Picture 1 (spheres, rainbow, N blue to C red):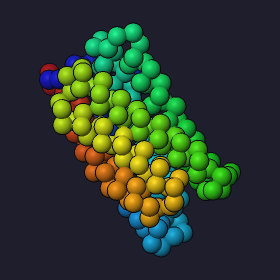
Picture 2: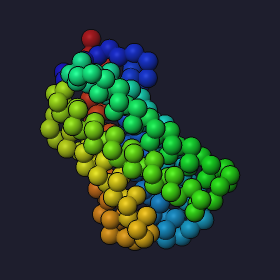
Picture 3: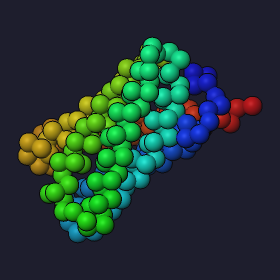
Picture 4: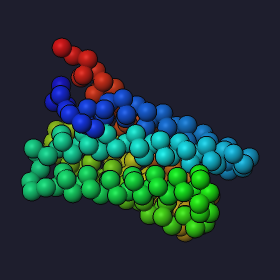
Length: 196
């Protein structure tokens, strides 16, 4: 098995959390589609799914920091985790402020887009460092594609709106790659934990 277990702390929750994050990605995309076509409550449901996605990805972040650390020199794994932590917590806080109506969508949009781009950078770095640590090439490629999707969505919204080509293409890449990455990782980790 490529992922050595057992892990402790948050990293031990990475398998189930990755599966929750994969589901939240798909559910959030469905809610976002409904929001852009019907409006109303669907936007809030998408925001809640985004919060769940970011919080569920924190154990995945902890797992990758613990797993890649022995393979990387001088604190690189911790630096990558720090980048992801800033992005994930930033996105979760911005979405929470939106759900609670503390700030408006327009006020929070730069923070949400910025935090999402940082999460995208984390995904790209996870793909690179994970590949160096022995992660299957396809899984690493899915992580990198997820990161590019995150950044493209942010860029598209910043340059225009949800109909900007970068938003649309980035959103599709993000949905497919991130769901596949998180699902594959979650299943692999849950299966590894089930082994004697």
